[in-house]
Length: 121
Image 1 (cartoon, rainbow, N blue to C red):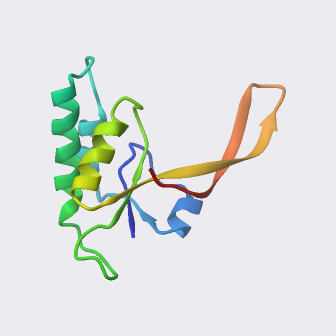
Image 2: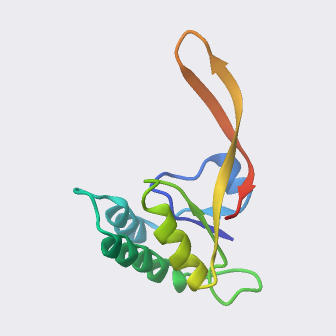
């Protein structure tokens, strides 16, 4: 199981790869922890990262771990180092979705992509 710690819903490809989204109550807290109204201090980033780990630590799980073992990360780049550290300290593997471009639209500067694997820092 890979819990989605991004502020975005998992794509069908990510769900097929084992990602689960938060339930509605936890999702509200997750979004609040990802939302910054002002530039955060290092201490604030650490506090929020630890709060996200606490949010997922006791989730019901399937498989051999006694708690969530993997977490998909994404969101504000300045938040990811603190979140990676908090997860690793809790023995939860941070993972980033690797997107493979599937369509480049020359008329509008956009690229469509699909989940194609994992990057684990």
